[in-house]
Length: 257
Image (cartoon, rainbow, N blue to C red):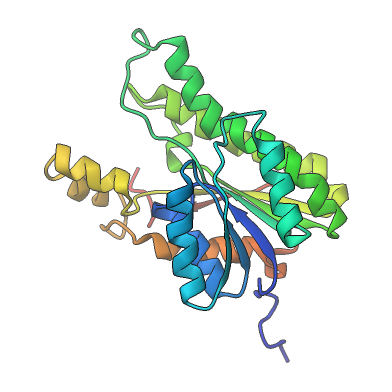
């Protein structure tokens, strides 16, 4: 006989979601809140955070709007302290904030452009996770989910900065899992494929037919709604995934190549 929720419950848990004002991050924040989690809605702009937090609270959920720039090394300790002051603990972290920059050839790549991508997509998750990990340990353990990308599986022309940052995040996930296992902390990554985000919609405006081309690259021949990624993240944050750590989980509709 199984339990009522089979370990999938995240009710009452304090979960920080970065990049939560739009796209996948917004879906994670609102979806986890509907499942009973207390969600810290974070992105670079406070008004964007407040809009999503207001949506959550209007639906009966519990949310804290708290802006932070994950690429700012010195800003993040204050951010984590504010979360702990408000909720008294942290149980989970979803490192979703990231940038998908304009294409740039390797010969034209500037140091500033490369560093900007790495700062947000790789250094940010490293710094924030390292600050949150001691609080997860104090709470008896917890879970970190890093949002990578199928773009990190293979290099592509004019997109080395993005692909390298996501490949690095998948590798960093494994290092975090190994280093913090004794603290009761599990760390996994997810690698989304084509989802209908502002990035994909912008591509359609600049490149008519672009969404159809992206959809054709998956076995399901479609672009997914961000809400379709919530279940995987909820699973990784819950006790149902208690023996899952250091792994990357592709969510792409099945890549054709």
